[in-house]
Length: 157
Image (cartoon, rainbow, N blue to C red; front, side, top):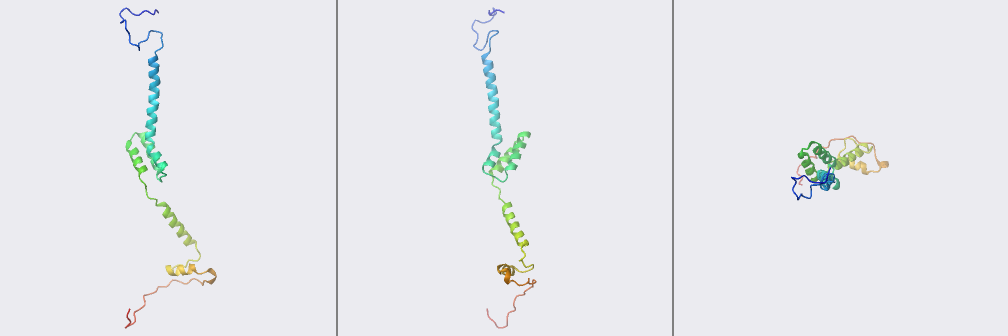
């Protein structure tokens, strides 16, 4: 092949047109730019997609796992409602019901396991029995029903 141009070719060619056998620098630069742009946009997309999960993790929310699962569902199904639900769930503080309930259950277990509790006693009698040292306690008293004292005739309150 010769380096001569075709006779119908214009005398002034643009810079991006290369002669046969030469390296096309513009195509190589555009290929590198395209790969960098795809990786950059993908990185931004994944960072934006994991935003609710990072927010829930940073603020140590109880619903962190739910937010993470919603993010994965949204990523694989391309249904953005799951991402929005995860974002809203990451922004909202849910009340902690498990800690007070666990404390109540622990206290009830302590009361149930205690040998000093009188079954059927009123709250005042049970408190009095628990406050008395074990060496001074008598045998448990069966529960009794106490009626209100009758008013004496002629007494003024």
